[in-house]
Amino acid sequence: MKRGSIFLAFMVFCLVAMAQTIEEGKQLLRYGRLIKAEDLFEKLVAANPNDPEANYWLGQLYLNDIPIKMKEAEALYAKALVSTNQNPLILVGMGHVEMLQKKNAAAKERFEQAIAATKNKKNKNFGDAQVLEAIGIANAMGDSQTGEIDYALEKLAQAGQLDPKNPHVNIAAAMIHLKRGGEYGGQAKREFENAIEKNPNYGRPYWRIGKIFETQRNTEMFLQYYNQAVEKDPKFAPAYLSLYEYYQNRDVNKAKEYLDKFIANNDPDRETDIFQADYLFRAGKYQESIEKTKAIEAGLKPDESFPKIYKYYAYNYDRLGDSVKARDNMETFMQKSDPAELKGDDFADMAGFYLKFPGMEEKADAQIEKALVLDTAQENQIKYMQSLANAYAKQGKPQGYYKWLARMDKVIPTKTATNYFYLADAAYKAGDYQASAEIAGRYVVAFPEQVQGYSLQRRAAVAADSDTTLGTAIPAIDQYIGFMMRDVPSNKGRILENHSYKFYYYLIKSREYDKAVQSAKDILAIDPENAYGKQALAEAERLFKAKAEGKIQ
Image (cartoon, rainbow, N blue to C red; front, top):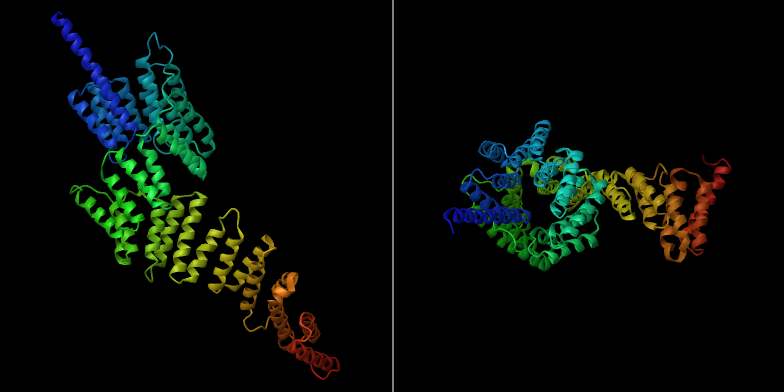
């Protein structure tokens, strides 16, 4: 073979090997193996700084860690624009950065420039499928205010026409639909299903459909899809993590099985380590969880920040009864975390820790207010308010307990009898008897066949008229008696007690002797031999007669 032919064959071999290596890196990225993927692409770029694909995918790895590595991605693409003579893929990468920076006009200009550069006789209408897919991915990332939805979907549809077997085009389109809001979940699901048709053994679309069902609280369906993801694609780690998170508070042994599989199919790092600390905490092995967290902290670089360690210190010290260390570590976690990374649950946890200390009620309330602003999902807001109400109850602070149950009452869409019961009871224990009676009255209207509403209403009304001078409890007592008359034998004692209350009020407080006579007769109608009833009737009739004769006022 001639030397030139040998050299050409060698170059072809190198190019094939490079392409396979890039595909390997893309596979690692898609499976969440970000550490290995980043290491691989950094080596490829170091070996050939002018390679556009290696530069593009390394930038995508950096953009998976925004905002921390946003500037690294921007610098990488800026340098690659020069070294690759404005390669179309790098143009899209830089446009991706600008899109995340909310520079939509500049980003779109780069996208269009990339498309124009890839149009040729074969693809005179759309350009290159890979470039179009990259544009779709750029618009799919970020929050709901990032990207141009219709433009991105158009480019992904064109990419699908040019590369009809590529499932990642459909996955990107599905992610864009999800950004549009929950009402587009059906369209997103169809795109994920299209991806499954193209590659039935790829776990991501199954997992993503499971995520849709999880937001809908459809446990049966999301577990079905998470399990399908790992059955079809046993190396797809994110689905194992979702299964772990579902079982972590339900079945700690089953959760451990999924955690082990997640770790086995992921790159070991501080994140996988913290999940192990989480498992130990869930398993009640608090000291072991602390030791694991300390080991993670010891492995951090001097300038490396990993605030999650403080949260797990807080959780474990709380369970071990050290409220001071729990509070202080949770405060450190909140202070050191990127505000964009904090969740409503974090503020709710902080509130609970504050509430264990006298005088910190305002701080606790402020944390829940932040959670409510951060997370507007009704279900989660109810959870946060309930958590603080429970914390107040646990600390023996009925006013705080009632305050947050009352706030929660305003957002609960469909109230159950239990909701009414606890709220009325909380108002009573907080000393707000008028509110308790009003809530119990709503309970009676909503659930007229349940005795608790009537009894709660009666209890609060009686407490509101503590010296029985106003008689404002009488209507509630009458309602309570009316309900109990449905089963006199079972309720005889309570019926007599409430008629006696009425008799006392009419005889002593209001001096409405005719009504006192009727109340005494009501007692005897239930129990004809009742000694108190007989005495009451005699006294009431005596006073009624005396008043009629003008002997008393």
